[in-house]
Image (cartoon, rainbow, N blue to C red; front, side):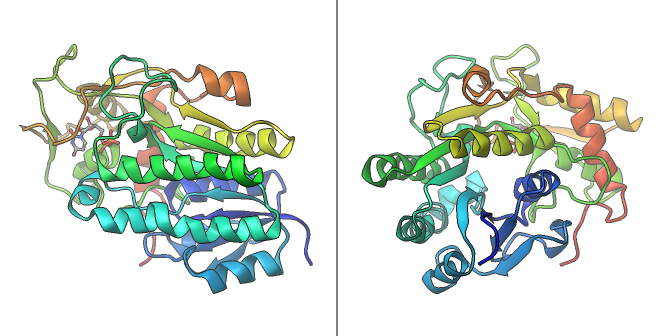
Length: 334
Ligand code: UDP
């Protein structure tokens, strides 16, 4: 059998592919399991990575991965991420985000693999009672997407009590940016996230973008979010692996910068970075959007030694813009 490896599910997705690249740069042995429903083959840029095309809910495929490789830890990204869709199609979300990972966890239990890093979300908190959000805030999601992730978090805690699984649930705030070389980046279909939506109006792929709500109780009336650079997210996963693989305790922690930026501020940053005027229309609130979502990131620092480094939102926009103007023009081949 080959050297011990880390299994990355969803390693061909946006945050997954950055994390994969970062882990590869550290010389780790890596296996990706991805069904390529939304992931992209070209997003896996390191040649040494073993790629298995298959679904984490397919018991045979998963068993083969664990039999053929000595998997010492799992970093789990595979999930559906569209909040609006989760409201309309809850079963799709509970199936993919909560139920299918059980197959993966069962294989881990059978093979004695006890380290799990989860791509979780700030959506587990629901409507904030206070800002910044601390991990002790009540967990009361307001949509099936948030519930589907929170349930998986709970399953991980129960596996911790039951058979000694140690897990890190990383609750992301707003992932953004690219690493600037234009090789990999954010390419969702449909694209719903703010920064790419803004930039797509400037590449001509979209006519205009809509600001969802201008009557929030915030300084400029638009929602505040905590935007975090994807490179910082990638590093956090590596640090969570190090923490757990060194015998550290399970943890659930926020990954954010602690800084809230409004939709209008992001548009301004995009205009500054690109030197172009963003065609904006002001529309109604989007259902389910809290006015403010800002992290208290101190637990991640205390436990993992992680802190966001690329805190300037202009750097995030600039790197996202570099991806859209790079060799792939913001899109992987279908
Ligand atoms: N937003 C917007 N127009 C868009 C997309 C997003 O005004 O076309 C706003 C959205 O209401 C939220 C913020 O931008 O306040 C970030 O939204 P995004 O979908 O990027 O991430 P979320 O916070 O929903 O995870």
